[in-house]
Amino acid sequence: MKMKLVKIALILTVLLFGMQLPSVEAATYDGETTVNLNIRSTPSLSGTVVKTLPKGTKVKYGTYNQSWHKVYVNSRTYYASAQYIRKLSSPSSSLTTQSATSTGVTTENLNIRVTSHRAASIVTTLKKGTEVKYAVHNSSWAKVYLNGKTYYAAKMYIAPKLTDATVSRTEGYANREMKLFAMRSQSSAVQKVLPKHTVVTSSKYNSSWSTVYIGSATYYTPTAWITPGSLKPQIVKENGYANRELKLFVMRSQSSSVAKVLPINTAVVSSKYNSSWSTVYIGNATYYTPTAWISTSKTEIQPPTTTEPNDGLTQGYANRNVNLFGRTHQSSPVQLVLPKYTAVSYKSYNASWSTVHIGSKVYYTASSWLTAGKAPAAPEAAPKGTVYINTPGDVLNVRSQASLNSSVVGKLDHGTAVAYYATVNGFHKIKYNGKDAYVSSGFVSSSKPSESSGAVIVLDPGHGGKDPGALNGSLYEKTIVLDVSQRVEAYLRSKYGYTVRLTRSTDVYLTLDQRVAAAKSLRGDLFVSMHVNAAGSSAAKGLETFYSTRSAHSARSSVLASNIQSNLVGKMSGMSNRGVKTANYYVITYNTMPSALVELGFISSPTDLTYLRSDASRQRMAEGVAEGIAKYVQTYH
Image (cartoon, rainbow, N blue to C red; front, side, top):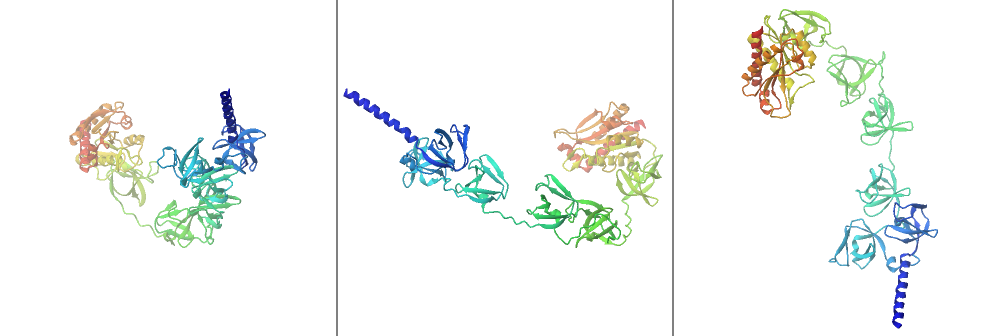
């Protein structure tokens, strides 16, 4: 019986002791909310918000875990974020271990050990900046409470966490574009970005980070990004003038939207924003424009936008080829170029610049480029050389302009020698009855032509002008084929006295239609188009000649192509023979005469490139093509 009583007593003692434990866990504290605080049904951010307590509300609360407190409202238990409740007094029932416990932050990556000894086992390592509950163990070690258990760590690497009660909030401003982070790490999510010079309220969290307060929300940012005190920008507004057509932008970028455009010499009020940009003030609105576009001198005189009689303009002339600018700076875009000796109306703008007035427009140029008075007669240009009219049995039209649509001012006989001054758009500029005139470059030659009335051979150097053709570095197809074509022309003229005409003798662009039309207008009897090949692989190489099976002259075209290929390969024994091939290229399909297209090798082949670069090889190529043409002419003409 006594044993039963002892057992019953022990059981009751254990039960009574066990009933005391919840009272320790449920210790109640007096606190105060430090922000407008959401009260939730569960200890989670996804928990339902029951209500929101205004900042400064007095509450009864108990500790739930490191992140959440139990909050007692209207005899019910809810949950709230622990960091936003400030303790006001000691709990109604507490443990000495709790009162000795503090909240701290690790100042380095910190090893947590099972005992207070450097040789003790490491349970885990907390990253720098981790918040921990801890109590002083001795002069070197602290007790650290993790997951309901007690461990140990070096006390020197734990700093007390600043609480709302000790936080000193200060006013300052962002000294750069300021990112606000969700956590004290620049790898965490960016919640907001504040422009430079934004006024902020903050408190120092630790030596590296500060807490930024916006309304009831808090964020984190590096302390170095905040300058304490108030920002007092020194804005100095200046009067000035737009020294060009002035674009006003909504942002400090010329790729942003243009809000307004002010005419040149509009008076503006502005202030320097930085070294490159100025703020322009129009009424209550502000815009941005490059500082270089505004002249701030108040003594400058706004030039008139139209030329009026008796307006003080000086009559003079350009003493060189004169660039006219839209503003007083030679790095600005050139609006117009006046040839030397052009008469101008101008007046001084400042010590270095003058305004030039042309109709209703005003430009700027260097004063030293202008001379007052009547311009002297421009010296007569010296001719570049002599050419001969090459129209056997016919005459050549002399035109007023470098165009087939311009008026005919005269005619020149075959073999006539004329001095030329320039080549323009496929025409040679000459003098006719003392005036400038033009003749088609396709009907002139550099040597006096023979009176032969045999076949007319039309050579077509491919590509030209804006179309370079195939290329390898600085070597262009258009350059190679013009050179070889001119060598073929010279060879056929000097050796056989043949009449040879080129669709282009200069670097001009012709369409495929224009090449076919030129062959017809040149009254050709056969047509040879010169090209250089290219391929995606450097292995492709060699010579080949094409004719079209769809041409009305395909039979003779085949003979022409075969003769050219045979003689070309004979002259260029070091190059591969790719043979005669058929292809319906436009210029050999739609021509009105027997036609062939020659490919003088691959510019993409290192082997062929050696020949294409060589003057000696180009001459042999020309001779091979020329001998093939001659063989054809001797057969059919």
